[in-house]
Amino acid sequence: MSLRILVCSIFLTASTALPVWSLEVTPFQVRNFSPTALVQGLSIAETPRVLPAGSTSLSTSFDLANNASVNTRTKEGILLDGESYIATLGLRYGLSDSLQLGIDLPWVWHSQGFMDNFISNWHDFFGLPNGDRDDLQDDQLNYLYSSKGKEHLGLQDETNGFGDLRLQLAWQIKATEQSAFTLQTQLKAPTGDANKLTGSEAWDISVALSAQRDFPLGKGQGAFWGGFGVSWLGDGEVLEGEVVDYAANGWIGAGWTPLNWLALKVQIDSHTALYDSNLTELGDPAVMLTIGGTLALSEKTLLDIGVGEDLNVNASSDVTLHLRLAHKF
Image (cartoon, rainbow, N blue to C red; front, side):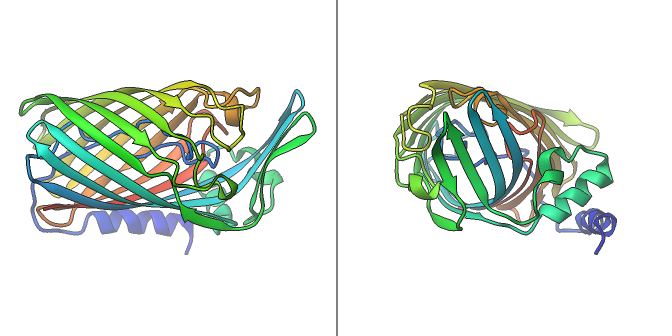
């Protein structure tokens, strides 16, 4: 199947009539899934509206991140060539009408992957640059980093395991029909394995403020949202001694519901450097664009679909695919 046929099929599927449900527009819960970034505990965009007391939301998400970059500078060298898959089970529970508890447990798998050829065709189809991809073999796993002649990271065999558990507490500062403001704190526990690149083996703490404004737009609803967070990163075992003490991140996005069961969304996520390095992959801010939408499968069941690109090339994964299924009880 050619890329053009696949893209057309996706749009035809999205236009198929579904039952009419009222759809709430919410942010994409995405982050930088580069193998050296996914182990760090930055804040993640979430809806600023907490659940009512006693309500529960259960979600499962799958993120595919394809990495293809090689860089050498000032006695440092890095090669990130491979595919990472992150499956996350999430739970949110309303402790009160203004306080919400959250738990996220990821499973991380690093692999040779299968998407390299498809992504090259995707870039050609949309006229996007192919970066270092033309210099790398398809479907290989090489996550390597060296500094001053010493190897600090070397992963060439497939690995998988539990990632770092994230505990969240969100406080609803204000909520009306048109707007919402929330303060959320997050604690990342070292349940992953640094040798497998599934976790940093360090405790991380983050605090973030998020907001959203909803408004009528045509026959549907529009929304703008954004957030800003600050994180303290523990000195874990992934590139030990190179992790910065503090990092900031933020997100901004917009959405529109042209149909009661469909929301179209776009979001930009960014964060400051996570490592003390002269390499773009480690020491530069990351900027990521996610485009996609939400399908209402039932009154209480939503499916998020998003495709991500790195706007600051090589500072995050080259291409990402995001799927998230959530159901409210």
